[in-house]
Image (tube, rainbow, N blue to C red; front, side):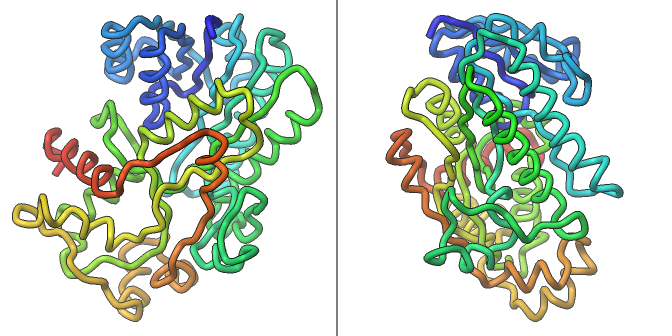
Amino acid sequence: MSKPVLVTGANGYVASWLVKKLLEEGKTVHAAVRDPKNQEKIAHLNEVASQTSGTIKFFGSDLLQKNSYREAMENCEIVFHTASPFKTNIKDPKTELIDPAVLGTQNVLETVNKTPSVKRVVLTSSCAAIYTDAIDTHKAPEGKLTEDVWNTTASIDYQPYSLSKTLAEKKAWEIAEGQSHWDLVVINPCLVMGPALNPSHTTSESINILKMLGDGQMKAGAPKMGTGIVDVRDVALAHYRAGYLANAQGRYITAAHESDFLEMGTVLLPKYGDQYPLPKKAIPKWLIMIVGPLTNKLFTRKFIRNNVNISWKADNSKIKRELGMEFRPLQETMEDSFQVLIDQKIL
């Protein structure tokens, strides 16, 4: 409990909340970031550190630069590997998504292999390594996702982000199984919502979704696009427990709610419906089929067919049982997220 811990991508959306928890628990955190001199991107972590009993030390590192995590990892007992590329607007999926995800994971874990102090690695993967489309959840055994399921439907041409998460996690398990001095625990979150600690510098997809819900883009209606939702603060706590609970093992589906885009909007109506043009009804699937591909290149007809008006199903009993997780209500998550965007004048 007294050894330092390494968090890669420490100023990220989930990682910032994890660092906050570690500092509140009095830990020494080795925070690996791309540019430790960029104060705008790390000021929120320094502020948290100043209010806690923990200590934070920043290290410059790069996913694709060999041995760039060596100094940051020295003497650490736990490595939380959260850093990973997340882009949807890409030209070359292999060089922009797949190589950085897989080679970055390989780079960090090969450094772990050379660092005798490390006993456990907690990897941030994704439910995207388990499924591609909501329809896949119905095709899983017993009609819902479990930790035994792997994504088999993503490809370089269709949902390459999901493919990158699948290949990166498989690479992690391959490296973990080739040695015996550390163990691997994997957190697989679904769509992460909730307030960002550093909203003006957060590139999370959740902020784009909140903007679409609140700025009138979905005023005429929101798609009933099935997805799992989990609060960023709960995802951070899941990482912390995965690091420190001795019985933590394998993969953990980290999902609080089986929801959809329309519900995400309607839970905001009681508090914000008078002030913001939030969606109140579902937009018909046939209409999305016509206008979707014109408004967003990710909304292909195949994607719409496999996700709109199709519920999302997953079994989160393992993380509740083994890590003792209880999840925040959806309304709390959505309201806290939305309020941050209002406070920051993003909406």
